[in-house]
Image 1 (cartoon, rainbow, N blue to C red):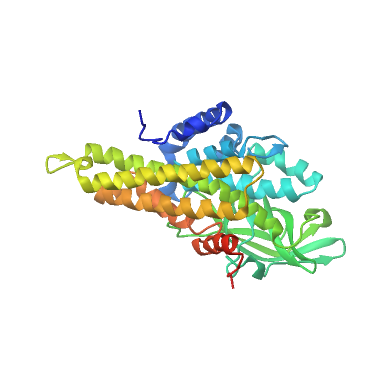
Image 2: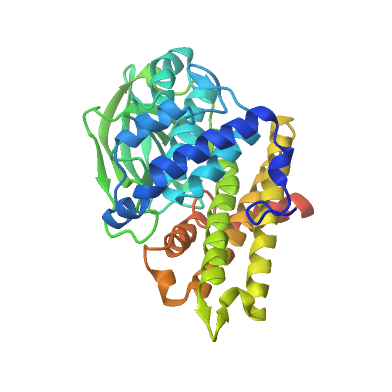
Length: 386
């Protein structure tokens, strides 16, 4: 018999370990996070202790090997992202930035000393990381960044600003990408370094249950060992973004599922003209379109996860998943909001919160336009970014 919350029985394709992770993360998300998320969102904050909770849960860098990381499959990590974003995109962003951006950067490009110093504490949630690539004038075109790092004797001196940085005011360490005479390079920057500051971005209407900041580097002096040794150019930061986009394409499935299920529940209990809303043909069409969108997005996530675990996934395929699934989730959220009518705009229901979050999710880690061009370049062999 079909189940409304998993119409295609996709979770039957998960192995025993992946199903176990699904259950543990779902229980944590629903028991620990869901009861408080509306308050956190309304107040525009996320408590720092949630990082320790996530560390105990084991979701930070869970798809990485060693250094206190769980070393799970990519599919298991995707399922965890799905269950976290079923509660809120901001909470999944906390995990993505910590694990798929900051920790992955150190794990993939750092020295052994950098890995030993930071990764075990970050996996445990005892140290918080952020990822400084985007600038106010360098979003989709990161090569135009203005942040610089120059040699001064044996040291590096970093100057510039980074914008829209998740975890920025909470972070103990920032991964900062800067222009050098040797190309763009990455640096591990302790946030207590003199000249480093982070300013919270105020008046956000989206992703309110996460920290977003501007990073300012005012002649921040770092030892030579702070630089990633072997990567130059955009290959380093783009590899990290690809990891984060993978988590997003799974997470949006969770957001879409929550919006659809909320609309279904409301339509079955709300009565107008003597019958439930779910009994009207136009609403049945809406609900059908929602369940198809959720199922198709889940199929995309599962297929790309299996490709990733096999070492076969390509960046353009990740772009496909991020573009298709974020767009589908936003459509589901909008339709669900409409079905809830006036009730849909309040925090008594999760739909409007997801809708405003997804407006950001569609944009960050690559806009619709950039992913469209990435996919087109893969199928035509012609790049049209400029």
